[in-house]
Amino acid sequence: MKCDHCGVRLLVPAQNGCARWFFPPRVERLQAVARGTDWLKEQPGILRAARQAHFVEATLLYAPIWEYRALVVGWEFGQKTRTVLVPVKEGDQDSLRLELQQEDVKEAQLHERRFYQAATDLEAMGATRPRISGRELALPLLPGEIGPDAFVLEAEGVPTEIGDTGRKVVLAPVSGAYSPDAHLFVLRECTTLLYYPLWSLHYRYRDRRYAVMVDGRNGTVHSGRAPATNVGRLAQLVGLLAALAVIVAVLAHATTASGRTPLPTVAAGVIVSAAALVSAWRFRLQGEVEYHEPLSS
Image (cartoon, rainbow, N blue to C red; front, top):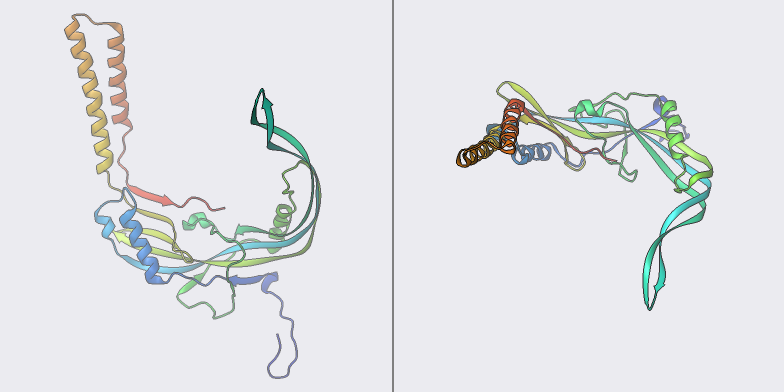
């Protein structure tokens, strides 16, 4: 920094050994509520009355994520197997055949590699790890930069430990060679805390509190809970039992019409009756619908 008063240049160290940056949210409060409302209306299995619930609370949370970034240089040697198309001649016709060929690996490496690790329990929050490429716009996290209505969650972990883990990850060979002879080195490395915005939405239904977590950057619903409806499941059970009852009745009629009781018919009737009893015994009413977005890479 350069002092505007005296012109002296000052070196300001990062807080607790690492820099802190945050991603400004692209989804505003009302937009996040709209995404949550759409989820309630579109997610299958939710009780019809709960689809009209109104969110009573929308809180912006900043979840910390560790980023380890390093410039990796070096070489990788070895061999790998590759599938290739080989032209062959069979009589007067030319054709192609797949063959496995081994080729030498001699690759020079000069890449910036990144390693990300959540600095808080995202699963307990109902969130998956956000998709971060390292090219998103981020701003330095300074005192007073984030509004008073938002909450910055405390980060867990030590920068040195994250750096050790990240260094092992980025120095892993990537050429695809088996038993590679790799000589990789780190020229420049840094560990940073990134704070990602998440909207935590809450609503009530019959004195119970439910939550929906919405991504503050792209509006994706990370997770949600809602009261479940059992109408469809009950209809499926009734339909299954009715179908099994029809099968049993047909078997009984066939036995009566033939005047004798063949063993295969009895065995089939016992199996169908057992299937009906097991289906009815294992059926349970569903209390809630719980949704989680598939884990990101």
